[in-house]
Image (cartoon, rainbow, N blue to C red; front, side):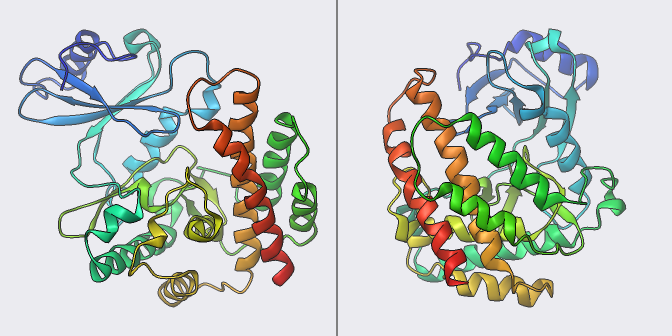
Length: 340
């Protein structure tokens, strides 16, 4: 832990705000460290030497408010607190930009490991790996079983026309990121647009559900689901389709995507689908569509990152590899829909 202010976090201002809003919460001088690995929002672990908390805020610089909505993340986690879905207890939301220069929220620190690689899981052995993967699926079922109205989230999104809006949104994003020819991506979009299935009853959707977005405790139980920035009310099978797309990492050879599914003992896609269907009772017969959609979404996201890199707006290493991996995602999405 560093006593110095990490970028974007003024510890003195934070302490003053916490003392005012939650008197007695903090017992000593604050120190902080940045949690590495976040894709967009900034995450810090803050401690007074005896207790620890987590602070989340948008990235530095100008951002679109809707893309980094701290209020949204805070609201969904607060709402899910009393349910069986494991989330960190929330402390407060600050919408006053004058404190840290942007909105932020504070939540309790929850111990656990975000498994990001097959190598980490391999050390646990096949039996423990399989159990963790099963619990990931079970937690998703628990999330989708929560009645939004029962936890005050009845107005958290617009479920009607959800898939159509999602497809329009990602197509618009693609068009804004076009800098090269991507064979097959327009075919993939057209296939998806032609055969939009009828959605099941709406549920709380996480939006980026995968193993490295949860924390796993020493007992191999999931202690917290994190990164709710894309959550909404919508079609729950989009979460399952994305989880399946991530599980195809072993056949895509994409170094920048988590390869946890390659670990011995990790269930295959068929096992994941069967467990979800059995425990949720949902019809998963149209799942090829949702998986193809997930590959389209991932391709657009990664093409956007590559586009910013090619325009000189992103600094760092590894971005060329991201651009090189996009065609594989497009091919895989088309292949899934063709086989179906």
